[in-house]
Length: 158
Image (cartoon, rainbow, N blue to C red):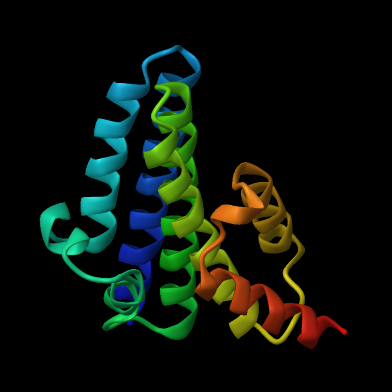
């Protein structure tokens, strides 16, 4: 079990390094190169070609990330995926691809809200991330599943 935990820790550390590289590329005005690195990071996170991942729904993608992992490791992997999606949205915004940016931001928000909803304790970092993602999405562009999650979380917080 220790070997598996070490692997997960190394994988998350490598993904964080890739995310930092993406950030540097994006802020240097190279969003296309940043998106290429993001795609590589997603393949590493899922452990399969990106074409296989994009062929399934977002909920199925989240299930793939959890498959064969402890609850804690699965949560870390899903949160890392939300960060990758958020960064993709920022890269697409920088490249003036607002349609792709909106999709990436909405996907990231959905993943974050699913994690907030599933966690019994209040995770301020995820809530802050959700707020930031909401600020990137026009209210009229929110999908019904996101609206439902926002309502459920709002009720739980009351």
